[in-house]
Image (cartoon, rainbow, N blue to C red; front, side):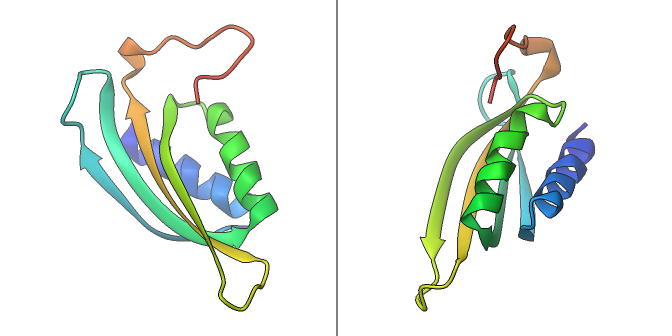
Length: 103
């Protein structure tokens, strides 16, 4: 499952025009509701980053964006660097909301 989530994230990022850096996975340390935590980084224009965030609930996996950091280019160009921490929830402990998103 985690490999499928990773592939879906990378595909969605590419479709949004983002250049992805390394994706790091860490096993869950907390409750049984979390399968793994992922840290990812990359860069792109702000509209692509926002499209990527908006696409997260529609990837088909229970993904929670835990935190995100955006930094600008010193030259003032349109590229922004982003760092995100995602939680991948256990399907058995996740119930989609009707008419909304879980992310």
